[in-house]
Length: 221
Image 1 (cartoon, one colour):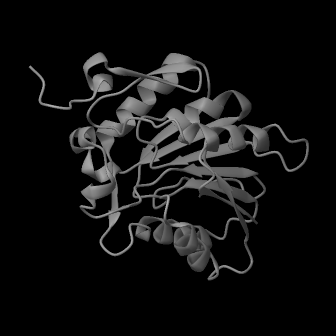
Image 2: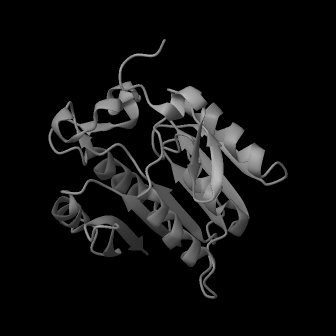
């Protein structure tokens, strides 16, 4: 017997996303439809004829649906997550769709354990980090209570703090050929723009979800 509002995806152990079925457990966030917009933009970048990325890094990968959904267009995918349980789900999903594809699955606090990458590699960083302000349940659906807190809540003040951390890590790594796509909260566009002003060497822009809200960021260097 499952508790009230228990997600059907956890009962069935699967979710449909971007044309594929993925395995999910209560250790990972249930993918949302809006994240397909990020995947579509990532695929456009990977198919461009100039500065084509060859390595994809899925930061805070969870179930691995983002990295797996673009893997056919990349030479290698690196999956990073702080949760070993989530990383195991990610690996199962990737191997079920791309059993022969090169990939790495690394327990990592954001980019802390990113392996060495050749300096001249074109890198595409993809991420949908936790961005909800801590315990801000008022804007969340009833079934969300059954999803892992670590995949939902970003930090205490704005919820955008994890993105601030990953931006700082990117700057410290001094990556020279990268693009970043990220998804954040419906009310965080101005916060994102303010934080990105700290990195004037980066080119940043925003694009919208299905309702016209700009909640995706794109950064190029």
